[in-house]
Image 1 (spheres, helix red, strand yellow):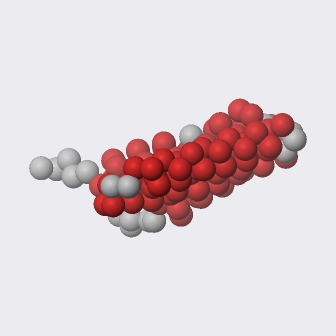
Image 2 (image 1 turned 120 degrees about the vertical axis):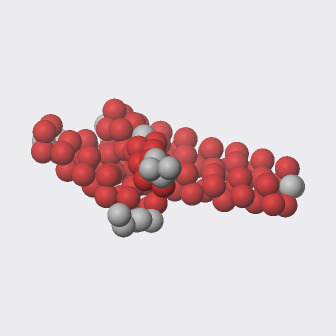
Length: 116
């Protein structure tokens, strides 16, 4: 089986869910909500990964605490602006944001070898 990069798998799932949501509900807010949630989720996941890698390798807790708080502030602000301005449906945004969990689960299940 082909091992796709994390971002490509996530974006493919975001595209599939957003198109299905748009076709079922016929709402542009559903489409943009899934896309916004998915993109923000991917950015958040990668950013948190770099913070954890840096904190474990260098050990400077104060610097990485500030980076985490900036990440948290950015994610909350971007999410609130998209939902408050009604560019994204809240449930669709949540669905897009949780695609990261599905992607990690799929890639984890794919990397395990159950034949042993």
